[in-house]
Length: 69
Image (cartoon, rainbow, N blue to C red):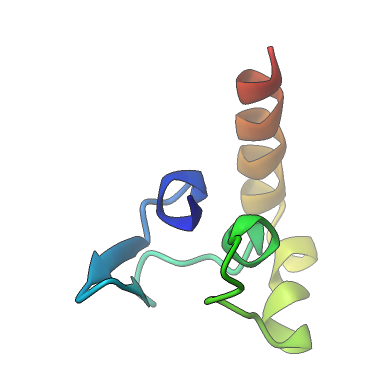
């Protein structure tokens, strides 16, 4: 589930473990919020990146709205 929820395609599964590509990850936190196994956790500093980058916030909101309709 966390792999599918990433709006930046930054997560892949390898050996049944989630692997985050730091070059693609914007720190929006969608993965850590939706991962049922709690396999991905963001530190407070990483979560704050969501508010520092308006493009990340906009993309995350757009994706959530699109999926809820």
